Image (tube, rainbow, N blue to C red; front, side):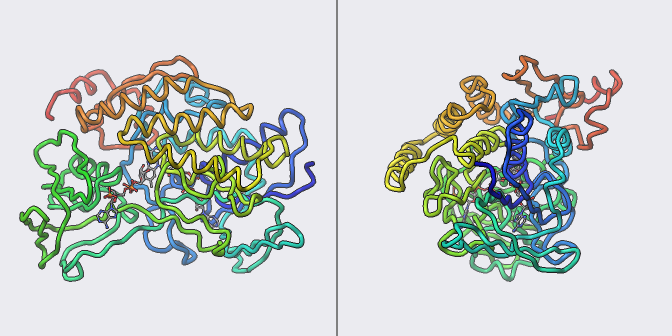
Length: 461
Ligand code: FAD
Ligand code: NA7
């Protein structure tokens, strides 16, 4: 049956994957349901739609974006490539394995621009509240049109939540931090390393944000970077100028004291302490409650909400795979909504969920995490017609990437990988990453003159 209505909240990579999945069905000449997508920002791309703003946006809504100037992909692009729209198809030439944000935004946009997806999206519109109407078996969603400043409601048979989960900061307290005289911010509000040139900065947290903001600040000229970890250090070979210390115990003025008894003065503190899954528009009984992990509880196949099988979440897991994982989820969600995939009763779904959660609990290393997510995607791909690709090779690339980072955190982005979709090997970027201070699309695609390239390759790190 296709005479039903689907609402999608968010037009980031997950929401766009959902639109793409239906579009591919339509292209085959098959009927699709009525679809509407709502996006609170004025453009699509989610995180990849860069904003200079912090705090609140033009219409007073909390800013979604956590990306910053000079952000380059933190994993090989060959691991996130869409199976139905390759980098070669988009750029018509090999590019490097770690493109900057604007280049990835261009790629995401290139695929979706091929369709009339924009017609389905209402921008500058925020989902405010959702109720499930048991008698009608429909969701009633209340939206605010931010431009017109009007509230309206829509009813949907299925609701797809693709609102991301790297937007609402986790802000722990450290004794004495309230009297720290310098800049204090969360990674969510970091918009580039420029303001930290010649500064001593303290990053609290030891995951992707701390690693990348630390390296960015080093590259752009901070005086020193200290990364303070709670559980495990990042543990790569750091260059002189970046060091790791155990957790901060307290602050006194501009001095941070660490659990190993050492202390240091800082100009700025950046809390790289992760994010909260936050759904202010969902009531308690529909709200996904999880931390950042590879298999959130209560989601059948990591997608269908177990308490209400008409509610779908995309992209809620921690992510090694990104764009192609969102696709495989969206294809599954599409076929499920179209009635092609039957899902078992709640108790059986619970058993399946438990199985995956136990499997995640048994993972220990980065390699285990990669294998876990690879298995998860393999299962989803086997259930739909999303173009299959060599996931074992992608897993190998992820593992090499983990090694590359350990070997040289400043140079891993200079490595190249081979696409499993096209067999094309990436081209080295014309300028080593540590020397490249311009992250624009124009500069990236520029044929830089040979002399300049040779000069830029001189080894200073
Ligand atoms: P998002 O991209 O977060 O998009 C969610 C969308 O929902 C947004 O457009 C938002 O405005 C909208 N929305 C939210 N709430 C509402 C509402 N109530 N009503 C209407 N619309 C709403 N991934 C990589 O593959 N490579 C990287 O190098 C990489 N770097 C990253 C760096 C940072 C700093 C961060 C935070 C993430 C990074 N990621 C990276 C992961 C990134 O989150 C994913 O690539 C991807 O953007 C997730 O897509 P999404 O659609 O699930 O969520
Ligand atoms: P992550 O990957 O969720 O990591 C959060 C980090 O914050 C992790 O190291 C945590 O340490 C640390 N943390 C959390 N709470 C605290 C407190 N109270 N004190 C000290 N440290 C704490 O978030 P990221 O922002 O790094 O990455 C998210 C995405 O952004 C990712 O996909 C990237 O691509 C960009 P723990 O290990 O739990 O002790």
